Length: 129
Length: 129
Image (cartoon, rainbow over all chains, first blue to last red; front, side, top):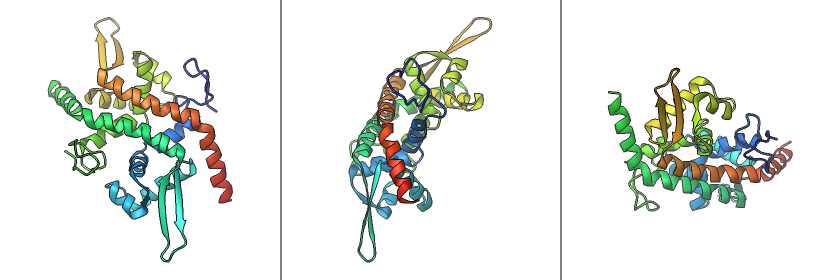
């Protein structure tokens, strides 16, 4: 349980509190690979190697760790088919979809506003050059 | 510039592309301390030490690095008063507010749904015990 403060007095969970488990889950969801993995799975159910190609730059080990953490948090579901060779599809749970929708909203803002970000960087660097 | 794929054919920026600068900014915004810093500043303009108390667990060095990256991306503004001792207020730019609103939406979902996350973890661990 997180601490309760004046801003979240209705909720027992608070990401600002150091030991609240919601902070750990926020980390899984917004971590280096977690966010991109959730966004990729919002588009489609994917197999491990498809996901690896979609999330450019992720290693096999990191993608595997990321998927386990997201599965344990109840965000990603794993569907193993009893075929030979076995086929495993990764998808989002209902909660995973809700979280991914929020993430995609954030990503959309960033992608749209990148010209402003790049302009801000140029101004910041020029002032200090 | 990121690569262009079928899902983002209107946008030149794509977080899925390894070398797109939007991926770096997504990292600043959702990194271990960046997200909490933006959410804290959405509530109020804060001084460095106020911010450090609000974002429990952040070190002076990490908060300083986080603020610099967010300021360079044009998300955080720094207002230094010519008083003695000098007083510096940190706040959000208009773009920072837009980004923080999306982040707060994500945090709200997570804080509300943490009981489901914790239940999923229990089930996951029990299955593997």
